[in-house]
Image 1 (cartoon, rainbow, N blue to C red):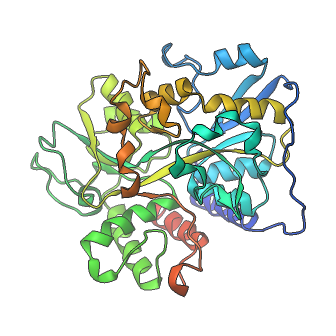
Image 2: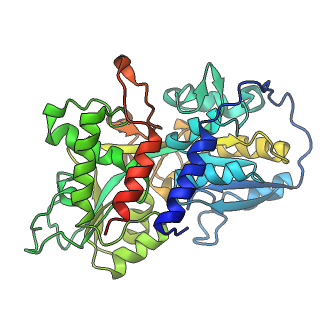
Length: 389
């Protein structure tokens, strides 16, 4: 999706006004049994998350599911968490693979229903670090089924950087790169308000005097310092990215040499013999832990629950992790998968869970009784920054 500045403001305002309007009067219910499939299921997903072999015949976890269940899978890809929230607010979808900066908004907005984990036999196989994670668990109720997780890495051009860059400063601060040229006009940043957390994570190390502890909990002084860094970055960035495939093309054709990205784009470019690699810099990384959530008005609940169970099979989990460069939510997928290999989970960051600052929707009330800057302000300011040049 592409928006001009006015449309972006209207879009995000609509997303936020709906997402944070909690419907306290509605009595929640959850599915008590799974019946015969309704013939189809529609899923809002990140690019690369639902593959049926069209991009690469070796990666297909849809065809067999459709054959075994009679449930046709319809996929709508979304480039940002805000787009996912907007699509779920519109309705007409059954499932969404939501990251932590969208999942709690969907719960608060009464757009998703509680998951009956007793109807998902493979729930017991989910990584214990994820089963009760706060981005899908509210008041002891589960509103999502963990799918995949991973970091937002720094991708760099290996011809420009003979040695891997060690800091995020290569995309935040103007400087001369190892090839003797400036980074101005040669770096990218993510086109989403949650990217403010990336700048906060950078400043947490670069300016420890700010006292930033959590990149999603910023008081006014901390927040203003982060915004200044992003305003300076705007002068370096010729184009922001939100579409994974477009970013892949940008790195091949637009002379870009460094950017935040997902492992998915890195894997695609490497497979095409492009001179890129990735690293988690010294400051650490933000990341995503995605959960598949069920719309409260789903018209294909039976097929949806069948998909939720299918999504946790070790084969699906391993194949997806291999394709996307992510980490499975089911540890059993880390062994015996021909595509992922027995070292794939370690390579993709299985042991880095504690080092990742997972996406989370910023709130005004934050730890220690402090008043922090809420997501609505993040969205307004980031839109302004992107549109300022």
